[in-house]
Structure formats: C-alpha cells, structure tokens
Image 1 (cartoon, protein in one colour):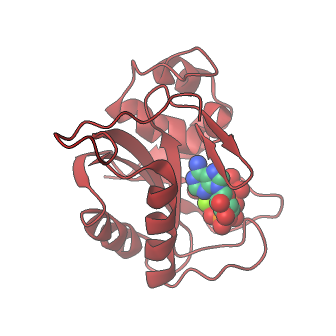
Image 2: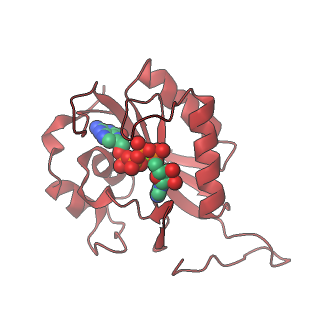
Length: 175
Ligand code: A4P
Ligand code: MG
C-alpha cells in the first residue's frame, strides 16, 4: 500500500475509520432482494452512511447476459482493505454466489471501488478497482454519492469520469 493506514485509537491499535465505496451488482435471481440483503449484511462490516439509487444496467461481458442491478454504498469502517475484501466475499458466499467462470452471472458481486487516496496493487487486491475509471455501471451510481471525489490514479473527478464513460446510455435509474 502506498498510503499506510494510520492508527487512530487511544491505544494506537487498529485501522482508521474512513469511508470506503463498495459496488454491489446482481444479475441472477431476484436482483433487488439480493441488493437489499447485501446492504443489510454490510451493516455488520461498518456503518452504511449513504446509498445510491439502484441502476438497471446492460451487462458488460464478452457474451450477452441478463441485465444487472448495480448500486454503490458508502461504508464507514475501520477494517483494513484485506479484512474488508474477506468480509465482502463472505457476504457473496452467504448470498449464494457460485464461483465458476470469470464474469459468470451472479447473485451478488461486491467490489471495493475506492478508499480515499489509498492505492493498492497486489495480485488479489487492487484499489481503486482496476476497471472503475471506465465503467458507467459503477461511475454513474458513485457519481450520485461522491461526484467531486478525485480518482487517485486517473486524476479526474468521478463526475468527469462518469460523463465520459462509454455505455452511459445503457445505465437506467430505477424508479
Ligand atoms: N480483487 C482485486 N481487487 C478487488 C477489489 N478492489 N474488489 C480480486 C473486489 N475484488 C477484488 O473477483 C475476482 C478477484 O478479484 C477476487 O478473488 C479478488 O481477490 P470475483 O468477484 O471473484 O470475480 P469477477 O467479479 O467475475 O471478476 P472481476 O474481475 O472482479 O470482474 P469485474 O471486473 O468486477 O466484472 N456489467 C454490469 N452491467 N454490471 C456489473 O456489475 N460486473 C462484471 C464483473 C462484468 N460486467 C458487469 C458487471
Ligand atoms: Mg468482483
């Protein structure tokens, strides 16, 4: 990690509380119910302090797939990113995620999008999410929560990236 996680507790232990943006995606089964169940379970990982609308989005996959419901939440947590990833994978498993082929349809996909200016580049943990800067299905909901946030490696705001993202016209706000 290029930005160390600073302890902030009186005894110097633990990671700092901050807001991490997490993407939720579902394109299998009752998508709205899976999103609701994931939001509920995220409350055990931190405090869900903001929730974007749900967007109905075209699957960005090599072969055609059912449309996704996508949403982004702001999660206030003191978990370090590796613990957070493990917790997110536990929620995916609890919601019936089958880990087959990459990009296969799934009941729930939870991705860590952004953790402030923190940049992590490890084989199994990349933050900001490596495809965040060009994906309308996460940029549009994220722009609803944090338009002025600057992507630490792209150097542009989320609103700018969302406005330029290909496929923006295939992302529809529900309701
Ligand atoms: N991993 C590395 N960095 C992260 C991170 N920041 N957050 C690793 C979460 N995981 C991260 O993920 C594969 C591996 O990525 C994990 O083991 C973890 O260590 P996965 O969820 O098991 O598999 P995946 O989702 O099939 O692969 P991947 O590469 O995460 O796929 P993407 O890029 O997330 O794409 N179209 C629409 N409209 N909406 C969608 O939500 N999602 C995808 C999945 C494709 N098309 C989509 C959507
Ligand atoms: Mg994923």
